[in-house]
Each structure stands twice: as C-alpha cells, then as structure tokens.
Length: 287
Image (cartoon, rainbow, N blue to C red; front, side, top):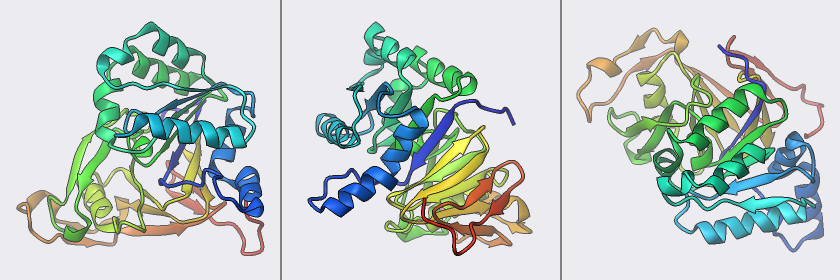
C-alpha cells in the first residue's frame, strides 16, 4: 500500500451546512460540523477551496449552497468549478484552479458523471499526483463525491433486492483509494445488502458504508477517523469462509459466512492495512 501525503474526507451525504435558524445549531456546525473538519484539514478559513458540483443535476444551486455554508464558517477563498463535460475538464482555467487549490470538494448526485467527465483527464492526473505527494492537500466528497474516490465504485443498485446477485452495479472510479469500496446514505437508504454484494465481488477490499452527516478523515491512505453525527459501517471480507458470489446466476440469493462487520461512530478509528479497529472509550468527548 502506497503511503499518501494528502487527506481524503468521504462523507455519507446530507451533511450539516449550517443553515439552521437556531444559533446553537449554527455554533455546533462551526465548532464540530463535518465541513468545519474539512476546512481545518485544508489549513483554515483562508485555504483555497474549490467546490465541484459535477455529479449534481442542479449544479448551480448546489454550488451556491456550499458557498453559503463555507461563508458561515468564515472561509475567504471559495470557488465553484462547474464541470459539465470532458471539454470543461480540459479548460486551462479549470486546470489552474485544481493546481492551486488546497481543498477540492465534490458534491453529491450521480457518481458516474464525475468519472465520465473528469476521469482520465489532466485534472484527474493532478488530483492523484497532489493527493499522493502533498501534505495538507484535501480531497473531500459527499455522497457521489465520496463514492467516486474508489477504484471499484458502486454506481447503483436496489436496496429492495438486497443480498441478491446483481443488485449492485459497479463502475470504475477515480482510484484515489483503491483499497476500499464506499457507499453512502447507508442507514437511511438501507444499503447493507448492496455493500455486502460489492464486498463479495471484491473480498480483498474493505467496504465502508457512511450514514448521512457522517464521514471519515483518511490519512496516509490508511488511517481512518470517523467524524459527524452518525455511524460508519466497515465490512471486512478477508475472514469469509463461504462466498458463493462467483458461481451464482444473477437474481439468486447469496451466501456469505463469517463476514466481519464493525459499527463505528464519532472519533473511532480504522486501520485499512491491518484491518484493525480502535474505539474511543465511552467517556471520551465528541469531536
């Protein structure tokens, strides 16, 4: 496993954006919210942040929401980069923004749009190179933006057909962190089954299911710390004693024996390489 110098922050979607009218809620967002963690990891409120709403079907509105959220946090240099085609990815103005940003924030939507419009472009190469080699460089992504970070990317799948072969659709992601498969909106949309099938297809990879308003700060391409108000579910297929995914016909119920699953919350840690959990003591403060 190559040690990365940058930081990844995948988010499960629907993260708090500080838009509540309640002053205490707004203060919690500023002090403890996921986007506050993103800003801190990037170097603080003067960091150059570029929001990319490529995955969204309403990129203008989504971009404006993030501009407002980062403004509430006091950020001074936030730009929306609206990429709607491969041609847009090749514009020098877009390339220059990616070269100079300290933080890239991918929005939610359709993760396939991210890989189709940005994958295998100079922007993609810059993102990978900077993530591998630059300390303090942050790539954050919510929902689709989180799922696109992987190599084996979940592109779709039905929660109602959980544990049926063929319920999950896989696609190639940006390969920022090829050791994992990320799924989002995990609890609310009942995605346990489709992540299980994804891990059955690639049992050497770690499956990470992120609840809404929940994320992970991933350092060195390996060390994960849970942030936010919900749960992160970690799937480890390395312990499987039975996995019949390869021999089944599509539409057939699957069997997986001894799949290891961890339920983690705020402050808990996971070591990808060693597949090891470190859980905060009960009396530890919320981070």
